Length: 83
Image 1 (cartoon, rainbow, N blue to C red):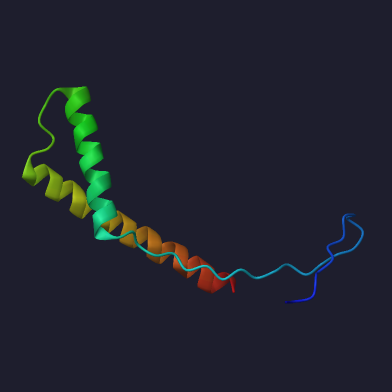
Image 2: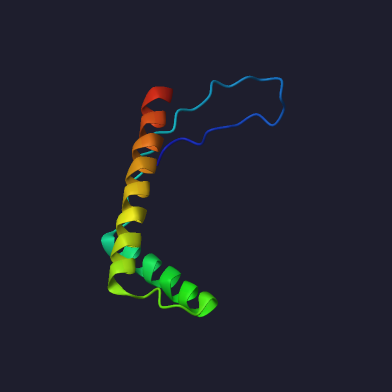
């Protein structure tokens, strides 16, 4: 076991900031499919049109994947630059 660390409760003692290494990863393709399916079902129910058409589902899935790729790259670059 590691030794317990004491953290000061007052603001008088300054501690150096701790570095946290975080790596953002994409969700699995199955999770993306589940998300897109739920969005399409909700749109169909709310709008009354068929948003579960295979072409719409594939297009929305591709769009979501592109946005997630961009966001993950952006977030991971921020972590690299902060460290």
